[in-house]
Length: 251
Ligand SMILES: Nc1ncnc2c1ncn2[C@@H]1O[C@H](COP(=O)(O)OP(=O)(O)OP(=O)(O)O)[C@@H](O)[C@H]1O
Image (cartoon, rainbow, N blue to C red; front, side, top):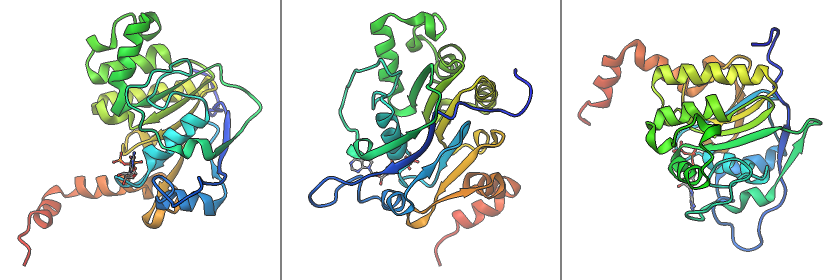
């Protein structure tokens, strides 16, 4: 591991929303977070690690997919060389985003979507490129093992990594392993943008945490005020009290 503070890659500096398709507004241009992005003018990214957090349905996947498409990744995930499509459901948001890039270019990169990772594993099998992924078909590994294989073997220095809920398959130990791997890759000049609900991943040192709030506003928050951290802490401090209220018969 390198000494000193993590530097990150700084490949993507910020994201701007420029325009919208003609005609009546449709998904994703109807999402409050998209309107908030337009009003804000730009979404500043950290040179090392940026998290997107927010409740279910606030638009984190939509945003990260659009950033991935604008950065040249396959909307279903994979490296920039992947061009397979099992079902075209990507939104047109990526075509309307402008990515303002830093001076350095990433040497490699990957877009990981937990929900379509099965299709990425199938594509890796079809291409027969197991060596870069730990030497074994990812279909022969558990869901969590395959995510960790990917991070350990396919992710490398000076990479741009866009991850959508990578914790979906991971145990607490798995999240801690990924946290360590992210830290090492940041020290080796990589940049991450990660949509997550995981209070463990959010502990990534010096990360920028962008929280999508009610009404779609995007606010930069500290670790302790990040919703997944605050609410998980409150629940774990007294689970019985929460269950009492949750299961109470409505009066
Ligand atoms: N292809 C689509 N067509 C229409 N609406 C969509 C489409 N995909 C997503 N949506 C809607 O857009 C909203 C944001 O979805 P998105 O998946 O981006 O949320 P999210 O913040 O990633 O949620 P989660 O935390 O549950 O993964 C949701 O209300 C969803 O129903």
